[in-house]
Length: 264
Image 1 (cartoon, rainbow, N blue to C red):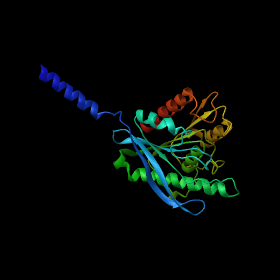
Image 2: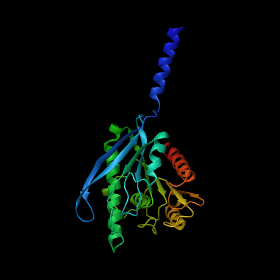
Image 3: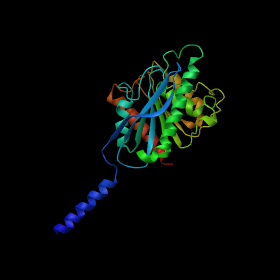
């Protein structure tokens, strides 16, 4: 009898170990790009990988906010501060990246160069995911692009605007969803709606946002047409880190949307 109980315990332990482990591994400061910044200086861009023990999981590539002039891949005020752990618990790998910033992006003709540089950095990070998928247990056929504020603008314009990057500059295969959190409209191709991007986009916004008003989110929704799905949190402003209610709203809507799109 004892032998049977011992065997049962061993089998249950083995079965449990084959499932999703609660252990989280964080690999910090991986260099994914060496390039020139807006001043022509050499810069190394880094990313962080948050992952559970499981293999071949969908991967969320997160792009932080900060007005394209401040911020980082692990800024305490950015939703990355709580999203990484929450998304891992739901069975995803979370990659948070830095990109080239420009404190003078508001100068004439500087904006397009700034967002183009950032879009190129997203493209390079996507390529890094493909090249390192096996090493880190990522499913390179199930990549979700997501960003907050200016990061949301970067991922939306990178994926849906044809004129920002040439087709031969960026391979967008494997991207199954885009998520815009407190973002803005398409700055390029918006009026002509020439986007060839096939992935659906979830637009998450607060109706009291005084940085990027809800009218910006509504315009993006209109630009993307049937690709877009918008959810609005009443009373929420631009940030998502201040209350448990806003954190839960963001986590639940992101994870539900990803579960739906990544399962197709």
